[in-house]
Image (cartoon, rainbow, N blue to C red; front, side, top):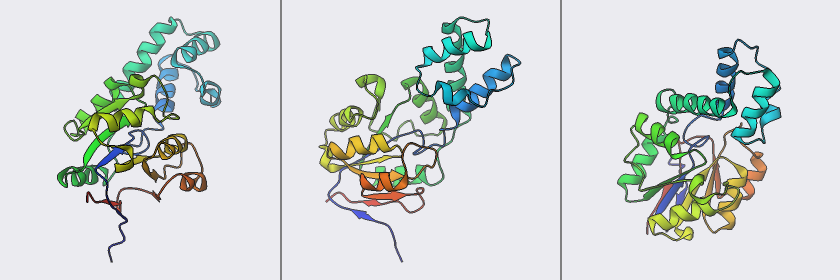
Length: 224
């Protein structure tokens, strides 16, 4: 029996990247561990908790001063970004079934957008590496709107680029704050149940039409 959810009268699907179509939520901890090893330091297991709310530059200042790193904060940030680009370009792969689903939607005439907190340089590297560079009709980074995805601006810009009203768009995201922002802005939202992302499952259900664990049985989006 076909258990796929049908979502009618929609014209576009907007996908988050990190935690939604790629398992990258471990990325920065991996980079932190590599960076500590580069400087022959034992990794501080509390480090990620301490820097969690800091900007990248603030993290660099803290890291330099706390662990006596003989680099400037600017050099530390540059190294981190270089390491991240290497991961996105060579080590991170799209989730099982996600690529097939994206292609299914594209071939059925649904417009597609990628909406991400990652920089253009990082998401472009990922798309090229995973042969998805031509899959999306529009791409948006939060850098373009100068607001995090706790605000709907990035998703609204993506809908505008596609020329489709939010009420005719389906948003896929794993983060509670992003789901809430998109839901309240008039998008239909589908929560991807990534356990490491922000928000509990009951909270995500509150702001989503449905929750999926992966893309093995995704909703069928129908453009009426």
